[in-house]
Length: 502
Image (cartoon, rainbow, N blue to C red; front, side, top):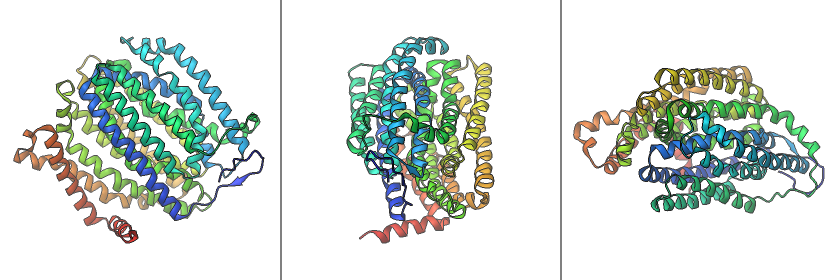
C-alpha cells in the first residue's frame, strides 16, 4: 500500500492475492474494452464523416505530442509501480518533476510546431493542429503520479471509471462536431476532451494528494530505476511510432490517414485483449521477482490468457476487413489490404506485449531499453528505405508497404525479445512459454480464412454492415469451435468461471 501521510516511513507493497489479481485483470479488461469499444464506434463514424486526409493530419500532430509526453514521463510510472518500498516523499518529488516538465516541454512543443510541420512537408493546417494539441503535454504531467498510484495498488476499478467516462464524453463531442461540419477540429476536440475529463475523474478517484513542500531529493532514488525505464520508454516510442512518423514524412496525409485507420483497429483489439493484461502484469509479476520459477509460471499463464483473448479476434477482424472498409465509403477503398496485413502484425505483437513488463518486474529495464532501441533503429532504417523506394505510389500501396516492413521487423525483434527475457533474464523454457498459445494461433488462422468459404455463397455481395455481421459471426463461431476443441486450458478457464457464479 502507498502511505499518503506526510512522514518518511517506508511501506512495502503487499504480495497480491489471487482474488486481487483476478479482480484487477477483470477491471483492466473492462476499462480497456469500454475504451476500445467506444473508440471503435467513434473512429468508424468519424472516418465515414471525414476522410483519410483529416485522419492523416491529426496522426502527424498526435505523434509529435506523444514524443513530448514520453519525455516528461521519464519512466516514473514503472518506477512507482515496481518499487517495493515507497514513501510520500517519492510521490511528491515525482509529481513536482512531472508538472514542471509538463509546463516546460509543453511550451517547447508549441514553439516547435512549425518546425514539425516543415519536416512533414508543411501540409496545410498541421501547425495549427499541433498548437491546439500542445496542452495535452501538461495534462499528461498532471496525471502521471496519481495514475501510477492507482495502478500500483491494483485499483483498476477507479481507472476503469475514469477511462470509460472520458471515452464516452469525448466520443459524443467528436461526432457532434463532425456532424456540425467542424472537419478536422472534431478530431482535435475529441482528443482534448478525453484528456481533460480523464484528468478530472482521476483526481476525484485517487486518494493521494501532494504535499505543499515536496522534497525533490527523493527523485534520485526513483531515478535509479526510472532512468532505464525512461530510456526504454523513448525506445518504445521510436519503435512503435516510427511507422506513422515516416509515413507522414515520405508519403503525405492520404497514406498516413489510411495507414493510421488500418493500424488503429487491430491495435485497439490488442489493447483490449493483451495490453489489459500488461497493466496488471507489472505489479503482479513484481511481487514474484525473487521466485523465478513462480515468476515464469505466472508469466506463461498471462501469455496464454492473452493469446486466447487476442489471436482469435484478430482472425475475425481479418475476415471482416472487406465489408468494414466498404461501410466507410469510396474514399477509403483499398484500405482492407493494409488492414489485413496489420492484423498479422498485431498477432505477432501479441507474443511481445508482456515481455516488457516482465523485464521491468525483475528489475532489468536496461535489457528492455536495449531491445526497444534495437527495434527503433532497425525500424528507422527500414522505413526510410521503404520511403525512398516507394515515394510517389498510390496511397494504398504506400500504406501496405509500411505494414509489410513492420511485420518483418516485429518478427525479428520478438524472436530476440523472447530469447533475452525467457532464457537470459528468467532462465525459463521458451517452448513451455509458447506451446500453450498454439491452439489460439490455429483458431485465429481458421477465422481469417472464413471468407474463402462464405464468398462462394455470395456473402461479399451483401450490404457492408450485414456482411460484417455475417462474416463476423461465422468467423467467431469457427474460432471458438477450434479453440475449445483443442485447448484444454481454455475449457478449464471457462468451467472455473461458470463454477464461481452463484
